[in-house]
Length: 103
Image (cartoon, rainbow, N blue to C red):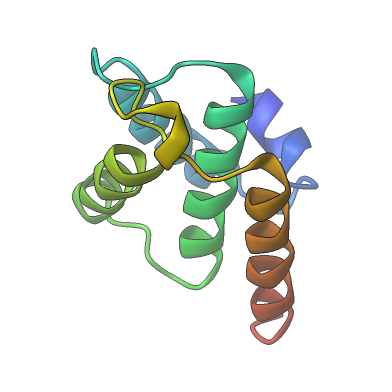
């Protein structure tokens, strides 16, 4: 839990970090999830964005997290269909820019 607070700049409360950890553990435990540090951190960043804008319902975060993970972090998808790391970095930068509007 503290790991994600650190990754997200300590901007989550303990309760929010616990929710993030619970959702991330549930998604990452799925057999199709490409469970590596990069994928977990990318999904954690996206879910953190939602938490920061006020979506804190665990069920909603779980549903959105599964949808994102199936689309972007599915190890059963052919590697040629995956986004390149540079594209993922650009998406994260765009998400961070949008997050600035809510601070």
